[in-house]
Image 1 (cartoon, rainbow, N blue to C red):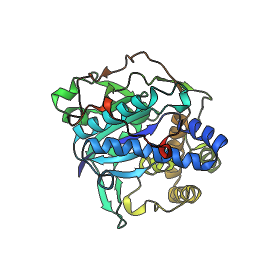
Image 2: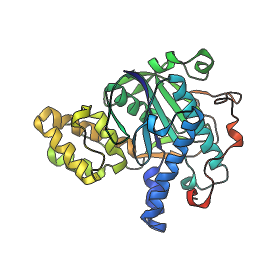
Image 3: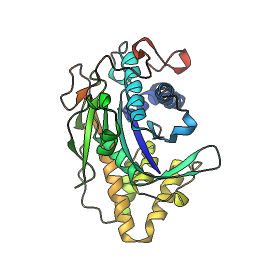
Image 4: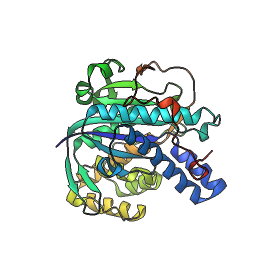
Amino acid sequence: MNKTIVELDLISYSAIASTLEGHLGSSAVATLNVQIQTFIDHGLSQISVSRNAAVAATTGDGAILVLTEAADAHHFAFAVHEQTKIYNRERPDPLAKRIFRIGAATGDIAIESSGDGHFNIAGLTIARAVRLEAAAQPGELVVDSKTFHALPPLLQISYSDEVEVAGKRDEKFAAHRCMMNSEAGIVIGSKTPEHFEKPTGDRRSILELFAKLHPSNLDRLVFLLEIPIADQPVRTLTAKEKEHYLLNYSSGTQASLAKLESELQYLVENQCADHKPTTDPQPTSASVKNEVRVKDSVLGQMAIISGDNNIIS
């Protein structure tokens, strides 16, 4: 089934969550997670798609969505980035800001109902969207060539020419960049660079990587491992139970363990990125023109985080 997969995450989620938990307790992190989903719900409302129809998985710091039209991925991303601009303008503290990076890929995926009102997905397209999201700068949408060519010409003009983005190790992807929030800043690297050896499937190394992996990345790991729907862990597992499940699932062969180690290295490396705020436009992609509107609405006049229960400042 041909679909467009959208993957997004909140920049500096670990740092924000750690600060909130240290000052306000774990309930503040739960409120942060709800707030992230509120941004996502707003984006979905602008393309008239329900959460139940689109959200395949929530990842704590974001979500993985399944959309029918590539243009909907663009409009969704634009709506989310516009709302973060509104939210951030009155919040000078970098950790008080909410900034996303988003990736989208189009291709064939398998979809099955889980029987509980949700659905499960599998396919290489999902892994590609995850890798494109990791390659995006804050405030940016990065799409693969299939997604770009499925966009109408009016939207294509907001994107860069085709560029090559790095995936895992020697992977390269043809992609197009679209800067939607030039106020967001840039990723400048890692505070504590990780230097990994070539993965061999060493169990000790895998356990050490799991200890470094943020729980929000466990669902991404499931998709990067390309686990068939029938073999995916159930949603009700705790983070530790899901770790054990993925280790057991990959223990059949040394090659499977090596793949697990490789994907863990990739996720741990990307979750360490540091974020530098800036007000300068980024040169890596075209910027969306001010006159572009989502479903004829002027997003600059709207705010979605309203009410004391939803504000984390």
